[in-house]
Length: 109
Length: 112
Image (cartoon, rainbow over all chains, first blue to last red; front, side, top):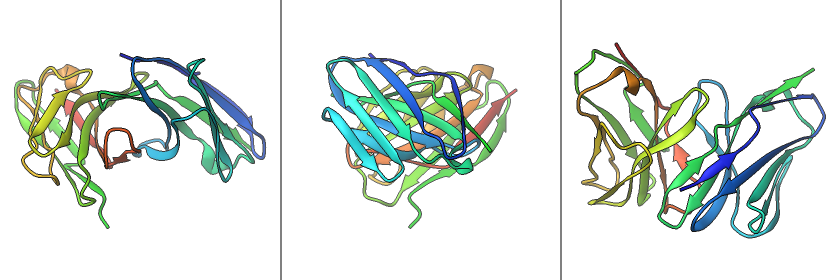
């Protein structure tokens, strides 16, 4: 099984940078995913890491260290529309995806 | 391009009733899954399927049944609804279990 931890809430100012950390314990690692979920809506895919290192996609970047069981999602140049819940999820070799409880990010003007 | 379609969007049931939540995808994805989302607990996997005719249990399968007779459809059945099953249910699909999943809009289910 998986044990996935991420902070419950974070607050930042518009235009700033926020880093959301995720730690996990797993057997049979098969990728780490980040999803964004606005209130009342479905999760949408943001980024995916299967190898160690940094993946950059525009204002969003995700980092993975498999040896440390650690990932982070970096949100740059924050905009009001980035206020949402960010979900860390770990895939395993038995085709299951386990989610953390999510981090609610509030962007203030 | 519909993606993943879930019906109904909202449903209220009485304890003991049964019902089926529908999920269909038009992307020819082999992998489909059902999650429930409760406040403070994140998404929890109920059942999943790696292809037509193949299903398996996730983290919280009790009280739910699934079947996968076609690639497109993956219905979730509540056998005898209980208040503890009040939740938001999401269906998702992907090419395989190791790829990013596409989620439906969810079904908000209340059991009285």
